[in-house]
Image 1 (cartoon, helix red, strand yellow):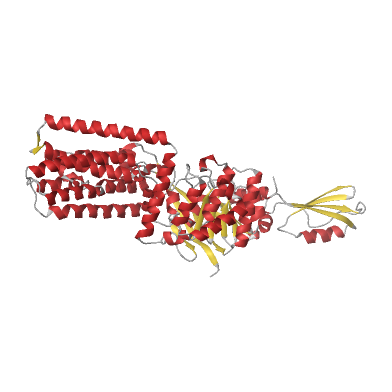
Image 2 (cartoon, chains in turn red, brown; image 1 turned 120 degrees about the vertical axis):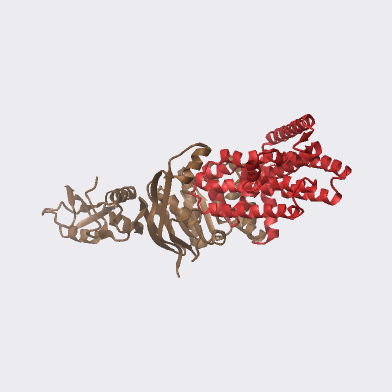
Length: 268
Length: 347
């Protein structure tokens, strides 16, 4: 029962069940879809408004900042869509539902992620992709980026989802000891991801250091884009950034595995 | 190697911390620790042979669920070891649980909003059950549990008894050699209970599944289990058959005897009390001190006997006494040795 193909089949099957279960409450689902659509649109208008008020932000123009914002949105939207159950992990700890994952003959994280996806969250990614599209087209027109670099930006946008995923995984792993993690998640994930919407150079040095080390959101957009736009860093950041993200994900999974062994379940 | 489930000096100590709310509280909890230690399971050992059907008894909070969770690989023991078919469910979790079935009576593992069939199909995929085997299993379980009628009903619309039937099918779908059941009859009515017992007895006999079940229901024990383990305060206070448990506790058995004529002489025998009403004599005796045969022999010397009625001690009272003894003796009563159990006058 190991191997990639059976795993993919099982994942799809599991997700399919989850979707069918969700369709039992169709009205809820449609309302959710509309709600996220409206929220995304409002979000988008807000940024547009802010960016037109401050045409330059720390030496970055509207399109350059828009690129950062878009990349972060793509990454975060993918995480909220496919990491939905990880985002709700506190429930598994509080109610002891993690028991049910441990008795299945697959890695717990795999079983967990297959239990839910939230396609309505993809709206955030689509909005981000639109923003990346508009901004990189403009930057390509002005000659700031070539076609290959635009392709690189697209790839890193998607890969960037590893960062919120890993942050959530580390938070969840932390939960095996402290159980309550919802508030902690806000600190570790929302604040850094929100910070990554803007060039890190606008922040004080200590914060910049934090966002490129312990909470490495800088690598999903700012670090590589800064070099591509000729604003700093060396060509090595182009391969180092994906490498850091993969390394961080490996580290996060290690934390998860360690935490799993400390799971205390709940009394009856 | 005939033991299929083994626990060796199994111990689980929970550190119950004082609940400190918020991020700061959680962070503080990382560096300093206040609270107390709870020994949920305190050094228990046992071995279950292939095909045994074992009842696991104990009052609430005695450590039953904690034991089951360690056996199933959910919790890691503080010390000691579990072996299922020779392998540790902690170190080889995925391999071990593939050959394991687990049922929690208090909560279902099924998709709440979907028909039973969806959960079963997903589980079949998860355990790599081949389509032909899956169909055969459904047919078999329809005969045993009449699952066919509820296959297309969403789980949330099932009665408790129906849901337990669905959970049993889910646990047995991949034909595990070992199944753990935590309170499988809890909250069920008499009919549903009987049906589940019938299923367990049948599947244990037909497929030779090794079953360990926790329960509060004495009928489960009397009707199903060839062996009982009793846990109290995290320690095993008894491990043996049901009959032996009665003997071990020394709850008085009683025997009512009808003589052909009222016995004239004094009633002398190994009993602890005797009450005479005309030709009928009721004697109480302690099974840990003498056998029923010895009592009959002594009664026979008092006059010719017409009829004998045995009155066995109620198992519920036996268990109560076991718990009480273990409580006062600090769990010192050695399992499987009747002589070690302190006998006291009945309540």
